[in-house]
Image (tube, rainbow, N blue to C red; front, side, top):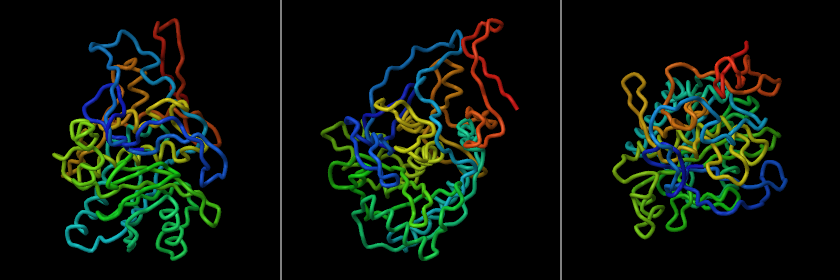
Length: 365
């Protein structure tokens, strides 16, 4: 989840996961009907204090700064097929242009060095925006139930496809008038008070019995930022997004955070893929680098993204480098080769006397 202020990371510039970190709560997971430990699923608005390693090149590789961030046996999305849903009033010329730009960003993100970075989590190194749709709505105060009902109705109306393909993911962009206040995901976004997220991702089981993975990105107007990061709690200086940023920069930063988490840990709070140990902060890879911004360039376009946690870089530098904007080549997957993950290769980390390194990467084909 993308939180607004006091949140996380080891090397850093800005921070982004807006969920206020309280004790984990037990609640019912909508998609499973079982009691689970609720974890952060969104971009926090608040920056967090972090322990920062001293500078200098590492003497050797090692377990890194986040040894508890591991693969936990759940699903990951390989070669994501993305459906964009623009919810609410997007009829103005300015909003139509913004929707076109957001679609272009999503296409560019999945054909950039950023996806090469995400390949280490078994997500592949590319993906496709399959379709974009506009769904009118006059409900401007949404809950998780409202969002899942909207998605189910869109399936029933053949506006979006039933997620029979497990690579399908759905990204929902809210218009400027729409806020979220939900007790299931604990996401409060762009409300007048008590905001806890700038974006989040979750999942539910459709009427046909298929699990649907989705992310939600609100309008992120200046008013939303001021409500999420009021002066009384430090204002813009303590926020993971900034008033000096354009609206587009805020939305692409949050979208890169949520998209990375959605494809590497789609079944959050269920059978998780890549995540930290329960009870620890920085639950997902986006949370670790929350609010740290960078850029990617694809063709003529330069976009703002959130830096993303790289397990490879963390281990190879033993915690000195944790958050990066991409890789010039697809990083080898760290997933074990199983029928579940269906990955063609496996990376093992071994200690050998020959190299005298505590961690040596071996790629088996």
